[in-house]
Image 1 (tube, rainbow, N blue to C red):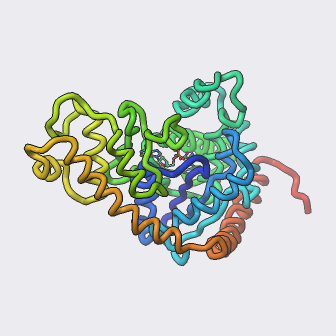
Image 2: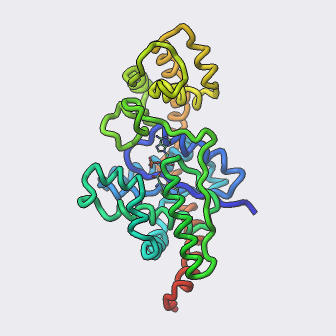
Length: 329
Ligand code: AMP
Ligand code: TRP
């Protein structure tokens, strides 16, 4: 039997090439080896304020992006998180097992709550990793392919699964996180010390998967660079290193090959070359995306949710019994 993988992305902000290279690209590569379930994490998205109509549109858009990235609905299950009520139910139960100190340690919570002040931020932002643990554990997930920044949440998921199993008997599979081959975090174009982020203040931080060619060229042109003019891949040139990473990940060339191509040339030439690589990848991607209708993706999500509900509901019957809830009938 194939092992199961589960992953998801929140339908908030604009999905960027960091999301693609850090997470979604490898999902397509894993779908043959594993039994795959992919979710659009709309319950997670509302931990930051969302406009309802935009949220609906983004939810469909993310599902389309999965498909354009090569996720095959014949091989995988695709669904919207809020369509399966068991996620919130299991999150409540796991929320009684998690310790405050464990949640206070989460880097993402510290970062996000810092922006508006921890005492003002919603409790959902704090319990966010518990919902994520519920997503993963409901489906007996063995492997969770995510970017590096989510690994801490996977660790907590493992802790909660073990704690539940110790207390109530073997119920959950202990999942493992899986980084993409390169395991790289793509940094912001305007600030290479922080990861490229869809909630960044400036749109010059990221290249969105839906940016057109002119926008991409403009953003790459404006990307910050390091001192010096040579095209070299090194830790003391973090801005350039990040741009070369993007170049290599999208072109299949090695960093050394890129250095050689631009020997004796400057940032201008390199940035033009990089723009062509990014545009060359995103143009066909966007054509695919535009070819997927709302109706087609809605139909795929309807089929997906049936499968997800069946699995989640069986698991929750077991969990309720283990915890000691009286059966309704
Ligand atoms: P998020 O944007 O936080 O919803 O993340 C969705 C997925 O993309 C997660 O698996 C992240 O680890 C991954 N991801 C987000 N930002 C980056 C980045 N800058 N570089 C690499 N992976 C990323
Ligand atoms: N929290 C993840 C992120 O921001 C998205 C997510 C929600 C997720 N539920 C998940 C990822 C379950 C993996 C497994 O990227």
